[in-house]
Image (tube, rainbow, N blue to C red; front, side):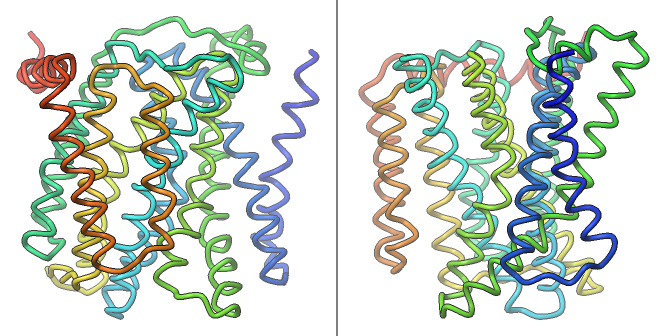
Length: 396
């Protein structure tokens, strides 16, 4: 029973914000950010335990996909808000693109590299070796990344893009559901809950998922808006705030979950969570934006991207292509993580069109160089291509 005090304390973290939100208590912008942030922080812990318990019922791939999907709910909530408003006010359409591109680049630049650095600091591991099963994530990430280059070429986000991206996501979920069930290694509260009768364990698992999801949904928008209001007061450009500050807040749960996996000696699972999150954000999130936009506008219409949004989409696709080449051989080391982090950190500070094209060019040339000089990577990519037919074919 030694874990129950911790479990009870974490349960209370989202509850305090739910009480504030549902009672309509008036707070300052700073206090809203603080309390909502604490709620998101607590929900992230609950999600990590729920995902571990879910692995007792379904495949590890599907459980990690479910965790990644729920953990990025703050990002979905904020971006869908901007997309919905964009159907009525064109200014918000740009915010939707800004938020989506910032979240995707933050996930790779900080999230992926952060997992490797955490593994090194905690366990002195200089690289993370990913299991072969994670080729599922890479396969669908590659497909989404290749198609993403079409968007800056045509300069719009339309319902055609929704069909393509949502179709890729559906195939990804289907592939995850067919993976084998692996007995997970449980620790802490998850281990004690797992020892309960099956019906009790399942009920608690479902409760944790739902409770955490509700807390995140009700926390995300006020948390982001309170930070935006503070930024406006300081005279910071809104596009920058939407692209970097809001995603930093909304991405916190999945980053915390991944780091928790690493600290428990499960670095591969932590990286798997962020890989799955990237697939989710690069398919479901992008695909939903034009759909929500059209629904709000009341007619079928495409979001027309301005020059800055086109550049941001190109840069985001290029970073994804480069990162995919790095991890395609199922090994992710300190040097590679340092490159991802070093090329990401300056981006919020160098925002000219020239800078965005320079970064895009670096990522594309880096991908070409890796493919040209790394036979291991070429074989890994070829294996992804060969495995694609089996991934999309119906089961026998």
